[in-house]
Length: 363
Image (cartoon, rainbow, N blue to C red; front, side, top):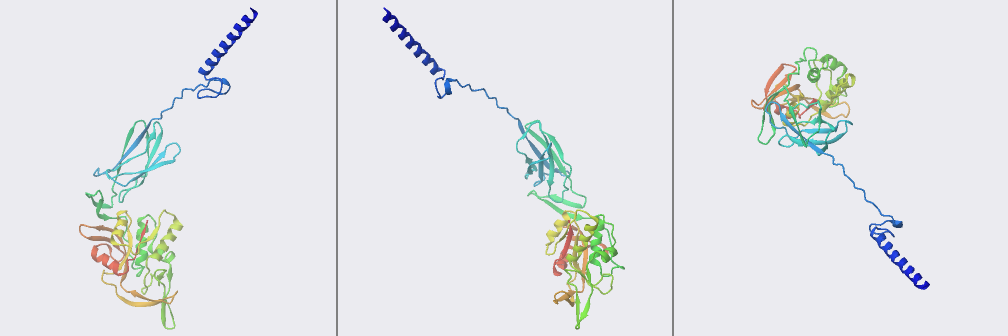
């Protein structure tokens, strides 16, 4: 009897052990498994709720304020309104549209125009935009400056300027003080137009690099006109300089008085390249002959630096080109011997070419 009781007790323990083991497997206990953890502890997976950040885009539509024609190729910077950090730069397409990449709702953004085709004026006013919708449209209009007197949009979407006249260039006459000072007088007129209160005499005496002539061993020596003015523009017998000494004079002015300007040598430029400067509102100091006739190369001297023989045109002149009219094929010129005059464009540029295409601009 006692053995029977012990046997039944042992069987009961085995049954209980089996049941416990089975339950442990179902709960993931008893070892590391697909859903179990070490030591028989069940792992629980928390419910993760991902935050959805709503985003939208800014569509910029850029047009000509006069004709409402779309303006292609305009660059706009997109900045973070809180940090002023540039996020991206977008460019308008042929339809004048530029679309940003997705941006977060609720944030403040700043749209700033960074470049625009000439002759449109660059807008310096940034626009603040708060994005609260899937697509935010921003209309931007640009104006043609007053010096552009005629233009039309072509079928190819390009802006064709037909007439420019920059009337900010004042008339400055070289005589009687500077009988041979056409170059420095022309520069003075351009600087006066930019707001610098300087006289041609001051410019000649204090800013223009000059080198006198002298004779040695029966030879006449003088300046290389690409390095200095040959002679003194106050003298009745004096010569000229090309662009580099005039650029040097302009740089001296900017060094002394300041101003965000850079003189640029345009020597070698084509007619269209020079017109492009006018399209941007920049008058051009340019070398032609006195009456646009062929150069008369009847004098010479030796360079005082290298001894090279230089043959000089005796009818050289320097003027300010401040406009053109494609319809009439004419150019507007501030001539320091005549004042504001108009010339046939073909004749004018033929003279410019014949003299060696010397010119400069202040950018």
